[in-house]
Each structure stands twice: as structure tokens, then as C-alpha cells.
Image (spheres, rainbow, N blue to C red):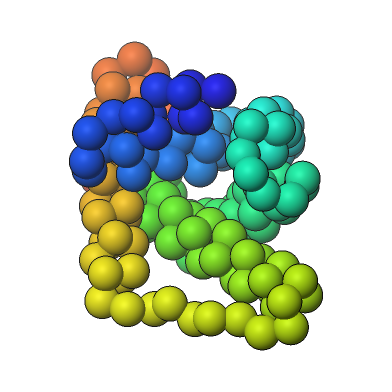
Length: 160
């Protein structure tokens, strides 16, 4: 609800903040996948009720993003450092936006029998803005949570 009513009315570039993905990744980093999935269901339901898109689209995209983030966290980025948090959040935001775009193209193809791909320079610049704003927010969220709890590590620790 906060994403739809408040964040979307912020001035550029802050309106590009993707709070559902940030919250899902943050909860995944602090706890386990089960809690992140429950939050994903809740955020996806609220988002699906207020957005003009087919019902279930946000839940599906959030689930895929959470599972891919968990896979990356388990097999590639094994520590919970700032760098891992930034990489996972950046990939999660990019994959979430790409999934939404692909699903919209599939729906358009189903309804109209054709689709129009709009991958112009403006599209990629907007995606860069979205990614940059979310990574900056992740940076501040990481340091705020690290100040409160010490579950996350500010740097990559090398075993000696």
C-alpha cells in the first residue's frame, strides 16, 4: 500500500523505488525463505489488488525473485555482506522488472495476436535509474539494519 500511495507519487528518481522486492530480499537476508515467502504473498496480494494488471502477476514475480535470490544466497554468495546484499538486490530488481515486462508481452500477444517490443534507449535508461535508486536504498537499509542488529557483515570476510 505504501508503494502504491506514497512512493509512486515521489519526485523522480525516488518514484522508481521498488519496496516489495527490497523488503522481500531484506527479509530473506535477515531470516529464512519461509518468512520471505509469506511477506511476498502479503505484499503481492496488496499489490495485485491495487494495480491494473492480471491478478497473481505480482505474487508470481515476487515468488520467482525470492527463489532465485535464495539460490544465489545459498550457492554463490554464501555470506551476508554488503556486497552480497547489493548483488542480490540488483539482480532481484532487474529480474522482477524483466519478468513483469515478459508477462505483459505474453498477455498482449494473447489478447491481440501480436506484440510490440519497446526496448529503446529510454527504456534502458529508465531501468538503469530504477536499479541505481534501489541499490542506493539497499546501501542505506543495510547500514541502518547493521547498526541495529549484527546479522549482516559490512565486508566480505576471508577465512585465514
